[in-house]
Image 1 (cartoon, helix red, strand yellow):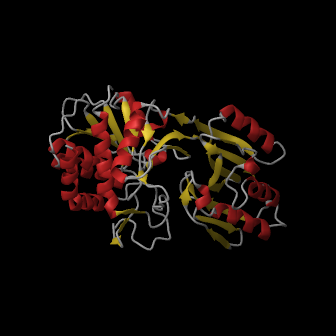
Image 2: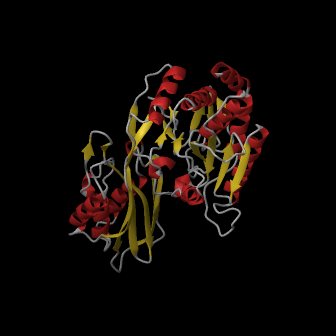
Image 3: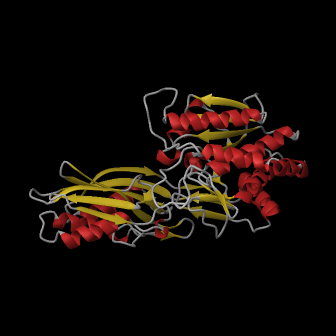
Length: 438
C-alpha cells in the first residue's frame, strides 16, 4: 500500500504546488472581527474556503467550523482517532523581501512566500497525504482528521474553539515545527512592563515591532521637533531570538545616546538595560535559566509603544521545565524593584512534554527514518504549537535538521521537493499508526 500511496503523491506533485501557490496568494493575517462567519477576517476565511474546495476536489469530507477551523476527514463518519493540526493564518510579511511575499515565486528549487513553511506548505503535504490514503484505498481502521486553523499565530483561539466543540481526535501531531519529533515545548510567558515618562520630555512617539512573537525588524521614534529616529534590525521567530537583530534594542541604544539631557533619559536607560542588544537569555531581566530537556530560557523584546505618556515594553519569554509563573513573577519583581518599570500584565502557558516511549512518538520516528533515511530522535523547542495544551500531542516537521526556511523572516520558502517528501512521511506515519492499538 505504501508504494501505491507514494506513487499517487509523486503523480500529484504539480497539483500540490499549484494549491500552495494559491494559498500563499491570500494575505491571511488573523484579524479578529465581529463577523460570525469570518471571526479572523475575510482574508483568512477566503483562504479557508480555498482549502475546503481543494480538499473536496480530492474526494475528502469537509466541514467549515464556523470560520474558526476547517475539518477535513477521510470519511463522513466523524469518528477520527488520529489528527493532524495545521494552520492557514500567517504573520505579517514585514519588509526586506527580495521575492514578493504573496506571489509564490519559484527560484532554484525553492518556493518563496509568507506561509510557505509556516504553515501552508505543511498543510498541503498533510492534505495530499490524507487524499493519497483515501484514493488508494488504504484500510484505515483508525480514521484521520486534518484540522486547518485560523489564528495559531495570535493565540490559538481556534483550537480552543475546536476543543469546546469536541472535534479534536485523541491522538494528534502538528506539522508546524521541525523534524524529527518535537516532544517538548518550552513554556511561554508574555508580559508587559510599563513606566510613565516625566513631563517635559522631547520624546513624542515610540513604536516598534509588529507582533510579540517576532524579533522586531523596525522601530521608530519621533521627537517634539519632528525629528524621526528609525532603526532596522533582522526579523526572526521569538523562540529563536539569536537568529534575529532586535530593532527595539537598537532604538533604545540610539535614544539613550541622543537624549542624555532629556527628562525621559532615566526611563530610556532602564528600558535599554532590561534587554541589551544581542542579549537573548533574559539575564538582564533576572530570568536566565536552563535544564537538560528543554534547554535554556530565551527572551525577546517584541513590542514597544508610547501612549499618553506611558512607555510599554512587551516581552515574549520561552522558559524550561524547571520554571513556572510564580518563579517568573518573583524574579521580575526583584529586578524591577529599583527601576521606573512595573509589571503591567502577564499571560503564561506552561511547558508541554510527551514521553519518547509513547506509541505516537515511536510511530512518527519510525516513519521519518524509513522515508527520509535520516536518524530519528526527539527534541525540544521554544515555539508553541497547537499541541501545546493537548495531552500526548507532539509537533512533527517540517523543517529538517540544519535547514533554515526563514520562518517569520523575509524570503520565507519551502524547498519544492519537500512538499512530496513531507507528504510521504505523513502518509507513512498514518499507515504505521493503523497498526497501533489506539
